Image (cartoon, rainbow, N blue to C red; front, side, top):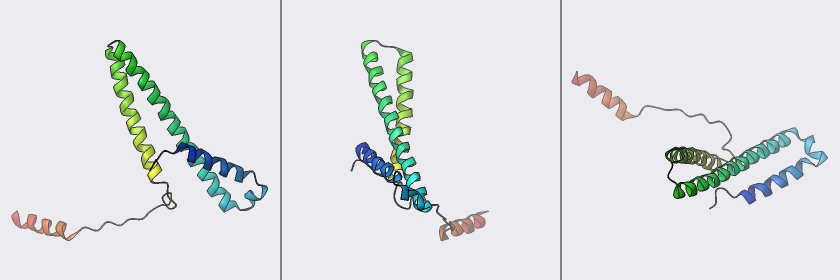
Length: 128
C-alpha cells in the first residue's frame, strides 16, 4: 500500500474541483462544505508531500557536496535537516492514516482506573 499516492490525490482533487464548478453544487450547503474541506485537506497533503520531496532533493545535493569536501557546518545542517524531514514525514504518514471517513470527527473517551491500581494503593497503604 502506497500511503503517499500523489497521482491519486491529484486525480481526486481534479474531480472535486470539477464538482464545485457545477452551479447546483452550491445548493446543498452541507455537501459543499464537506467537499471544500476535503479539497483543502487534499491540497494540504499534496503541498506537504511536495515540500518534503524538495527537501529530500536538497539533502541529496548536500550529501554529494559532503562526499566531495568534508565540511562540519554542512554536516550539522544535513543532520538537522534529516531530523526535520523525518518528523515531517511522520506527521504526513499519521495524517494519511487518519484520513478515513470518521477520523475528522471528535471522540469522547472515558478512563477508569483498573483493579490493579486499587490493589497497589491498598498494598502501599499497608506497607506504611
